[in-house]
Amino acid sequence: MPRRTDVKPHQSQSEPTILDVARKARVSKSLVSMVIRGEDGVSAKNREAVRQAIEELNYRPNVIARSLVQRRTRMLGVMISDLRNPFFGDVVSGIQMRAADLGYRVLFNTGDRVPNLEEAAIESLLELRVDGLILAAPRVDDTIIERACRAVPVVVLNRDTSATCSDSVTNDNLAGASLAVEHCASLGHTRIAHIDGGTGAGANVRREGYLAAMQRLGLAANVLTVEGGFTENGGYQAARELLKQFPLPTAIFAANDVSAIGALKALEEAGLRTPGDVSVVGYDNTSLAALPQISLTSVQQFGADIGRLGMECIFERIEGRRSTPRHEVVAPTLVVRTSTGPAPVGAHGHR
Image 1: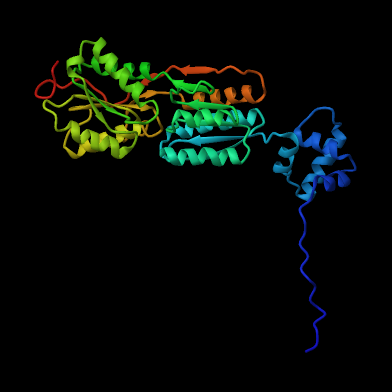
Image 2: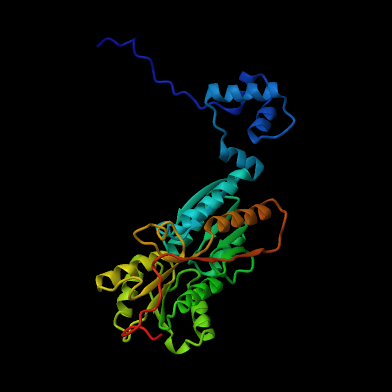
């Protein structure tokens, strides 16, 4: 069989390098690096020549190679506890906007509220050689946080931790719980129940805040807590347990908005009106709480501010501006909507 001579072997086109950019722009490699890093000391003419060469060659800097030289990636790892909770969308927004201002990129992952999966998520971020870690409401043991601190700077968001090496930014959960209970009491409610967050980050402090507020208001005899977790199903099942109580509580303070929405569903199924029969207060003031068909009274914790402060903490550590831990507490407020109203007079209420 005659050999075909019209078929050319495939030639793979290699990716352009920083040297290709330098040759095309007729400048040095170091000057190209300066332009890429956004440093001063480059003339407008040379900066434009480099920019044009990068565009024409479709050049992308090799982040891995650059990190090996600089021993920095300018990338941060963020482990989010629960991507289903819209509160963390605000946290992520605060982190990402501030990171962009400071010249950092962000890698996100999650452990889906499961401690061993969170541990694996943290390890995967460390393997990618991130410069620092932000852990948003982690459920891992403090020893895991301590171990991560030995590799990179770490900041923990929305959780108290005994790890002395990390920075932290938390909401004032004690104050937030007090706001919820005091609001219900101001409407004449005395039988105020709490659906707590179980083992979720911050849940124990919100529970303590509820108990302290009930004690302070002279309502300790009416304390009623049910474990619900931070999920809609958790709130739903907890509310079903509360419906077995007699007399019924006239107000429910749920550990977060997602749990409160589950409670609202259970109350509706039982034929109870909100707030006519039972008032409900959530926590986080997420976008869900503001929906007209839900209109949930909720404690506002400022997720974007928490994310921004967390980013600033990690930046200070990475840049060597501070070596001692920094702990920030963000004060909450209460946003009142139509899920709360005056305590009913009669069978369910004790006004």
